[in-house]
Image (cartoon, rainbow, N blue to C red; front, top):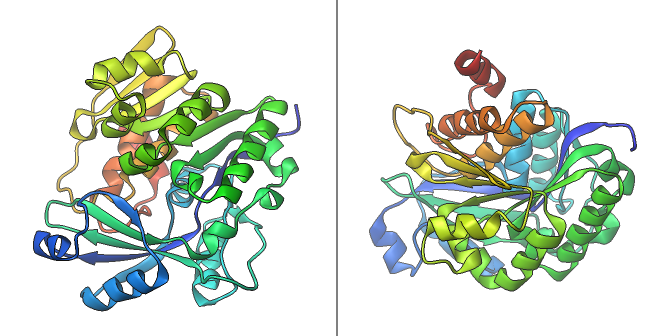
Length: 330
């Protein structure tokens, strides 16, 4: 096995998030399905941006958020994602490197602009996302560095990446490289609508390429088209080594072969914005797994990270996660 350089290397869409508060009336008037992620073109993205109120801009993207939280926990990590050589691309690159994360993917010098995600947060803290993939669609197999993948304990990928064809090939190349090196592959299903678009391919992916699966209740039920969560739980246990299934205020359920662990949610004073909660949970769980903790402790770490994330606007931690985990778990 090659020498270990990273705990986790993440592969995903390099996106700059634009976060704004909104209400149900605006979502209805713009025909935006609440709580879902929709792909939009540059024109639609600009139209919605012009209609919203004050906004906060920050680097984002599902897998990038997970890697950022891993850095906050103290992990050594890297990220692979495509940006354009424009202002937002420079912002994204600076932000992620400033966290101590290796980010060496070559910038695109032509074509679409750096991707953006308009995150509309309603009063109940639900987020509705309108994503312009832009330069993200340019990520391909040539952007996968075999040596970097082989040097990571876990290669983590987001389901959103499965939309562009070139990114699919990058995804599969990375998974095969990781397994050749004796490493683990992890996948987040990302969104129920994403699962609906790619269900058959995701089923094959989970069964043949994934060791650690992350999904929320809606996503796992959709993946197996099950009648309920318990039926989906039974189905997934035969397809991958570990499934970490989140259930919002009910906590999470960890499935590992015949073993099922139910872990309570961590307390939070006020839920402000659920953006990035699943990404943060994945970070805490992967931190635990890659640092020798058992599955229950790892799930608790995921819960602590998620609780921090939903207590404020945005999908990056405001409080160092390493201190929070140490304070709660000792």
